[in-house]
Structure formats: C-alpha cells, structure tokens
Image (tube, rainbow, N blue to C red; front, side, top):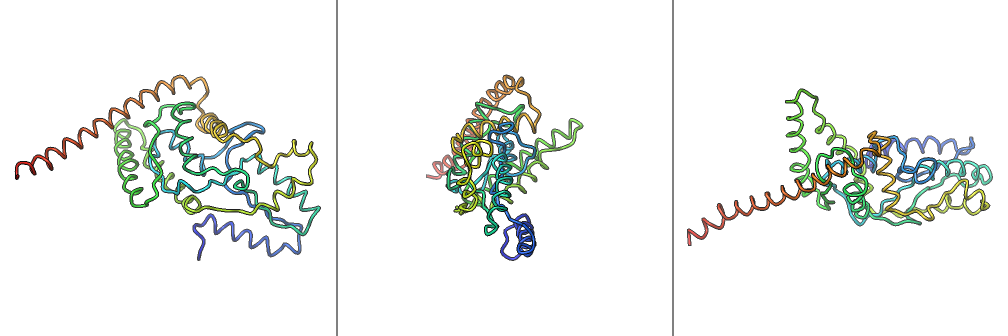
Length: 297
C-alpha cells in the first residue's frame, strides 16, 4: 500500500487510477465526497441504512458501549449529508457534459461549515443522554476523547474490553450467545479506519463542485440544493440520532418514555459507582500508603 493509510483508501485510489486512464477516451468525471452522513432534509431527515463511519460510533456511544476515542478534538469533521451527495451526482454529471474541461469535483463541507470532532462528541452525548436516548443502554453515555494513544489503550482495556468480557460471561451463563466482544471488535475496526482522518486538519478545495451552483436558476437551486445554507448542526445530529434509532435499531418513538426512565436509572447508577470507586481509591491510599508511612514516622 506504500503511503496509503488503509485498504479502503488504497482501493479508492486504484479505482480513480483506472478511471483516469480512460478520461480521454470516455465521457467520464470523478466526484469525491468526504464522509457521507445521514440525510439532512429529503426525503426523510436522519435516514440512514448502515452502521459505517460516524453513525456506528454515535450508536455505540449512545448505548454506553463506547467510552474512549482516540482523535484530535480540534480537528474539523468534514461530512456531507447523503441527500446533498445524491443531488451533486445529478448536477455534476449535467455540468460535466456542458464543460468537458473539468473532470474532477470535490464535494466537501469545511468551506461552509466548521465543526470539530470535540463539538460533535459533546453534542452526541447530550442528545443520546437527554433528548433522544436509545432503548436499554448498557451504561450512561459518557467517556471522552483521548489525544494520547497510550492513555486511550489503557482506558479501552478497563472501559471496553474487561466490561465486555464480564457481561458476555453473564450472557453465556443465561444460555445466550455473547455479543459485546464482537461489537467492540467492530467498533475498533471502524475507529482505526477513521483514525487517519480524525487526527489531521483537512483543507479541501471544492471550487469545481461549487461552480455548478453558479449556473443554476433559483428554481433549480431549490430542486437540487448543493449547499448547506441553514443547516443547524445540533438539529441535524438530533435527526441523525432519531434516524439511527428508528431505521437501524427499530426502536419506535413509542418507546422513548421508557428509554428516558431507563436513562435516568443509569445516570444514578453511574454516579453511585463513581462515588464508590472514589471512596475505594481513598480507602486504598489511606490503608496501604498513608497509614504505613505515618506508622514508620
């Protein structure tokens, strides 16, 4: 793979290489969207059909499974809603046939919207804990972003793997198949795929993609919106969480009151456990560190 960070990026580069070889012989253009995320407006706000990328991480964090993430909290998250991508494919194909000299188009968001991964994580925790909780969460949503890989790996051992093994053991004792360890392996795989991108601040030129907007009349701009004017970030992620809940997890809106009650219980359990852990640590320090030291003196 040489300098490519993963096989996903490598395969895309190979595909572009094959297409580029035929650009002079066929009516071909390349469009490069950044991270594609759930629908913004049309036809169903928040709709999504897969757990890849940020959606899977959102669900894992909302369920209380994901407690630590290794990335740069100040890095910009360049994402494009799926309905904007669909519109862009149509419009870019038309624009290319009118202007054969432009063959590569970037579809990105940092020129219009700048939101950091830290801001997204904070919004996600608030939405999942208070506004749009998932059913039967494993733990109260929390955790934090780590900028140190060593610290992240240590936290992953104690907050991800050990709890997964413990709970899977209980699941096996009840006669069911273990699930949490496999879930964490998938989360780790998805996180490693995103690591290369979330640890860097990207500045993409999207001039070619934006050029298509300049030739549209007002009616065409309404039918095929390509910009993100009026996008409310918090409201967008609220709808994305609702979409993940409804379309992927099959959790209907009628279950929201029960989910909120369960979340309140998990909040209390989370606080009680933290207090007990703090007292346990203080007891250990006093009994085995401070007390022996005082006796020696």
